Structure formats: structure tokens, C-alpha cells
Image (cartoon, rainbow, N blue to C red; front, side, top):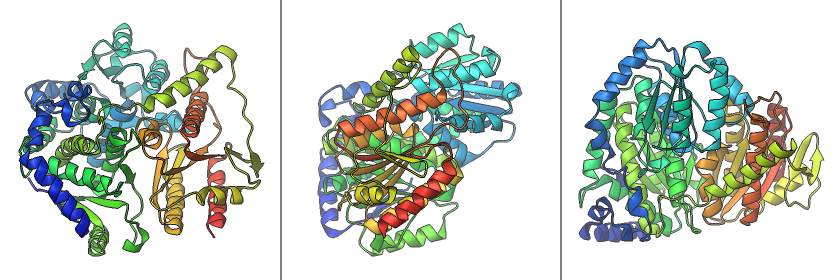
Length: 553
């Protein structure tokens, strides 16, 4: 198994070497495996380590995966739709985009957005009558999987035989699945948090459904797990010491570069790293899909991680990473032999994140600030259920059908954006938080904006689609250091969708999530501005891009 290799500036190299020797000589990897909570904060960390032995436990019962694969294949399903959020959706999404459709098995789709247009798009891509629905929710009480289930259970004629659930034992979702006659219920482990659950049934059952050889996938992960138990030459320990030590030197912007064949790995890494380390005023801020630039575009707050698919590398990425290393940036290279070795990457990064959390002195397995947005959202949806409307809101100003909300002394969009972007300082990052449909057009528009801000201001940039980022990077945005400048983008539903059994619609839920998110950011003293595009999203994005360009001139 290939060890990672890295090149660092001299000061960073000395600090990493010193820290790595301390971890190896003290056999601190063994303390993690022994469940010694004092390696972190001495709180309840030992209760959240079920992910450590999970590969061996899963391999010991891999026959059940083969049996379920045969059941799925014989079921005549053309499509599968996973209904989840955060830890229950990101691993299946990575697998879908990395493996593609496997012959003889359903074409897997993932829904983790309350945007009505996104839901309509997903529904058009599947054959409702021949779809296997996977309702995935660890707690069973997360808003999004529950309303997704309500909607599609109704659309599927309330036929429970075409639904399976993945949830923790005793959850509300287990009760719902039993009452509605679901085909199967698969259980997670209460000792594994959602973002560490990729190798548990939350990741492996969707993998079975789409026809992946789960035994082979788990074997790769298990080989890595064994390596991560070693006192030395431990790939997870080495990566974790690198990340934690560099973050303590203010190199806390983890810039992820992944080969095209595994490009979506960064979406999973974002949640794992941000939600685990972003708290108590500390964070490693992951940056996924930021376009690669020349070395001079980056500040000293960066560390670059290159997940290189050795069976299908990208020559332009190779040249770009080589240039970064030659210019003296902190660069970590991780070779990945093929897509099945994503299993080893899942475990490597879980272990590394636990190590980095120890170096930062935080509890890597909780997410105290995610709940704040959930509470704010619930308050708004409860008010809608009681009154039939959300509380009124008044924009600071409106220009050409675009409304601006938040603290701004300006009266036009260009000046307001200029003032907001001028709040960026060295070591800050800029985040676009877009509560719109996640599609190629929107992602391209937002990518162009983030590139423009990066090049003009010399800062790291992020793009998050709401509400999915709330269960991911949202923790770091609220609980990490106050180094983010946020531009929230919202839109009205051109055509809303009802939720069976509720007064509120998907459009109302999305609006409540965005408003709750902004309220918490504001309460935490974050620099945040909201741009409401109205119902014409594409046209609104064009206007926003033009105003942003003027603001940066």
C-alpha cells in the first residue's frame, strides 16, 4: 500500500517531523484504537469509535451483501433513489459518480436538496414504477429525509415493498418503515457518527444496490485500517499529523485536488473535515473544486492535497501540482490505484481527521453548531404550520428584481458587493452559499464567481449548495474561526411542490433553511450578506456576476 508523500516549506517540515516523531514514539495510534478519550478532550469521544473496527465486522458478514445484491438484481428495478442528507448521502454520491452504472443493477440517484426544481429534475430521471427507494437517516428525525420519504412514498402509491430504510436501531425512521411495510430495514451503529459512516451500512447498502463488489471495496478499506494501527509508517497517522500541524501554523485552507475519475471525493471530504474540526473557534476549512491556478494566486494559508488516480491521471493536474510544490507551497500527494481503493481513502481520511482533531485539541466527533441552524429552521416551519406564512422580511434595497438582505449601507448591488468583499483580509476565505438547484449551469456560474474573487482578493474560496452544506461545511462556518465572508444566494420557487401531510411545501422548507442559516451566521458575528434572485435563477445569476465583476474593478 502506497504511503503518501509530501513537500513542505522548511518551517512547516520541521514542525511536522517533530510532531510525527512524538506521535510515533508515544504510539498514540494505539491509544486511539484503545478508545483513550484523553488523546482528544477527555469527554465522550470513546463512545464514537465504532468506525475503527467496522471493516472487519462488515467483511465477517459479507454474505448478506451478496444475498441482498441478488435480491436487488432479481427485483426488476431500473433505478434506485437515495433520500438522505450529509453523512447518509455523500458517500453514495461519490460511489455513483466514480463507478457509474453497473450492468444489471439499478441506476442510482441521490437526493439531498429541498429545492423544488431539484426534486422535479430527479423525479424526471427515474421510472417511478421501477425505482427502489432508499430512505437513509441515522437519527431518523432529520427533516430532509423525512419529507423526501413523505413525498416519494405518496408518489409511489404508498407501496412499501419498493422502499428500504437505513437507520440506527430504535429510531423514528425504524418505526415508520415498520408501519409502512418497507421491504428491508438495515441498521447502522450508534457508535458511528454520520460523517464516519461510509463503510457501515449507510455507505455499503447503496453500494450493493448499484452493483459494486462490496467485498472487494471493504477489503481495500480493511487493508488501510490495518496499516492505520501501526505505530510507524502509518498512512492515516501521517496525514493527520500533517493536517493538524499545518493548521496550527495557519495553513488551514485544505485545497482538494482529485483526478477526474474520482473528482467527487472532495464533496465527502468536505463534510468529514469541516464538521469534525470546525468548532471552538478552530477549523480546517476544506476547499473542493476550486479551479487550479498558478502558484502566485495562493497565500501562505494553503495546503494542497492531490488525490491522484494512478490508473487515469490528469496531465494538467500533474503539472499544476508540480508547479505548486516547486514554488514552495505545502503539497501532499496521495496515490489511488483505482476506484475500488476509494475504500482505503475513506478509512485513511477518517483516521487522519481523528488525529488532526487531537492535535487541534477539539472533539472531532460532535457537531454542536449544526443544531443551531436546525433549531432556527424548525422555528420557522413551525410558525408556518401554525399561521400559514413565514414571518415578514424587508430587504435593505431592491435593484432590477434582485433583493439584498443584511447589514449594508449601500443602495445598489455593485456598491453593496464591493463593500462586502472589501471585508476580506489575508487569511480569510470567501464562501458562496447557494440555495438553488445544483446543476451544471449554476455550478459553472458560481465557479466563475469564486475564481474571480480568488484572483482579485488572493483568498481561498468555497461554494456550498443549500441545504446540503448545512450538514457539512456549515459546522465550520459557524463554529470555526471568524475568517469567513459569506454571500448567501436564494431564489423563489418558480413551481413549488407540496409535502403530503404538511402545510409547508418544499419551497417553504428551503426558504426557512436559508433564513435560519443567515440568522445563525449573523448571531455568531459572521460577515454575511444575502442576495435574493427571485424566480428567474439563471438571469439573476448573470446579473449578480456582472455586479460582482464591477465591484472587483
